[in-house]
Amino acid sequence: MNKTTFGVALAGLCAAVSGSIATAGVSDGSIRPQLRPTLDATDLLKTAPEANAPAQLELAAARISLRPQARPADLGQSSDVTPVSANPAFDAWVRGFRSRARAAGISGSVFDQAFRGVRYNADVIKKDRNQTEFKTEIWDYLDIAASDERVKAGQQALRRYKRQLERIERAYGVEKEVLTAVWGLESRYGSRKGDIPVIEATATLAFDGRRGAFFEKQLIAALKILQSGDTVPRNFTGSWAGAMGHTQFIPTSYEAYAVDFTGDGKRDIWSDDPSDALASTAAYLKRFGWRKGMPWGVEVRVPRGASFGDTKRMPSDWATRGVVGIDGRPVPNHGSARIFQPAGPNGASFMLFANFDVIKRYNNSDFYALGVGHLSDRIGGGPPIQASWPRGYTPVSFEQRKEIQRLLKRKGYPLEKIDGIIGPNSRKSIAAYQRSVGMTPDGNASAEVLKKLRGR
Image (cartoon, rainbow, N blue to C red):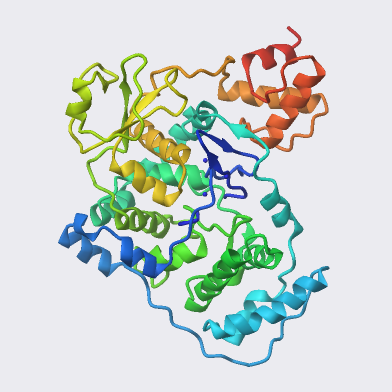
């Protein structure tokens, strides 16, 4: 779950807007709602809440911290890059960019190897432009973020990598369920990390100019990754926006936070072994103040008609005002907290603690942070959200969503995948079908749509 700090298959990123997000750009692999705001290493050092980290964890982190970059010798001064794209302007831009990359410390040989075969990628620009078509409500987002299928897969991943995750938790103080949830939202537990060459994607976006300065910075950072020897061009792939690996770092975030947890001399977030990627995510969250043992939030009951704003109080104080846990008992005093009602007073309410805002440093979206938090609870055996949502339609199961997609495709609607994920293409097809049969074209995968498709 349109996510620029950390960047983590995301072919699309949706911007979070006042209680709803645009999902047209969301990929099958990741449901990050928003491109993340970038912090470089100097910003990190200025803002890191180091006082929260025990000394022994600092020492453990230092032993597996950022790997110094060893730059290979420059084997030549002139470029041997052969333009291969059908965009002469892009090819000229690459030639001009080479001098800026060299000034940033990139060797000529690394640059030439990295750009060999790189071409202007029109599909990347298309995806960049197509990020704001549909809005998703919080209940639709959570239906995907914490679906039964994603929870089950997360529990399997947690069991499979239990030993590595427990070591990472001991080193950084970030719960293994939280790390697994980030992994699940970012790349479906490593199954969809992205297959677009990072150099090609970031170069195309830097040349395009809409966010040229940002993506040129990402491109320089990507070249530094290659220069460090952490990976090689043939393995250097990610999303259309340059987010990489199991937990989808953007290049500048990789530079600042990625760690070599396995001790093999490489910060390999692309490997089949997710240890480096998960440890890097833990390092990131710890750096921004994650507190082990503090929940991200809890679902609560609130007095009817109450309004809260952004007021923070201790849970015991909230209890005197009628705000209690979903079980009717006061919430334990984990620290000051605010009340969050993402769908307004007619939907679920949550008491949010400081760790919620740490998740938002990873991706600055309330929806994303709620998705990570709730998915982590579910992976750990917690229940679904208890309150109902003001949907306005009857939701359907994962298998029923796939049935809707199959029936639409059978009727000739352009659906590429039958995967139960109601993304922008599915919503567009549902809306077109609804329009054709006189229904309100809201694009929702509902029981009403399924009944109509079945001819009942």
